[in-house]
Image 1: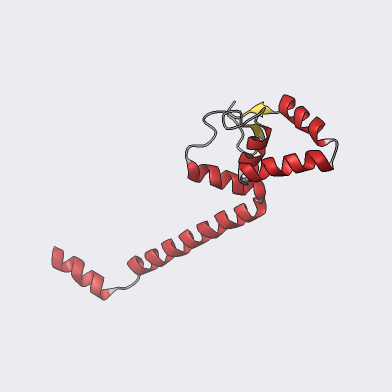
Image 2 (image 1 turned 60 degrees about the vertical axis):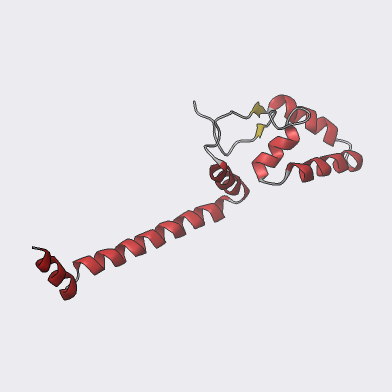
Length: 124
């Protein structure tokens, strides 16, 4: 079974300890330094953070090496995880734009264009 790109994974390759912070950074698209700062601050503010950190570290799966094909693919999936509705809206908008442009091209080439017809006749 292939890896799901919308699932949380530990990023042990880029992690310092268990890969939890780098996994959160990969999942959200936030810089890993800011995630680590937030985790350290939450250790002092909330007592349960340390327990949660270890639970996530033991329960979550390790990130597969071939999860993303390139950096653009990684950014796309981070955006999908952050706001799925916006991602869906963006994709629909792109398809509508492509559809509109294709309709314009079709209209241009199927309409009664005498100049184009003259050019085609001159080539014969």
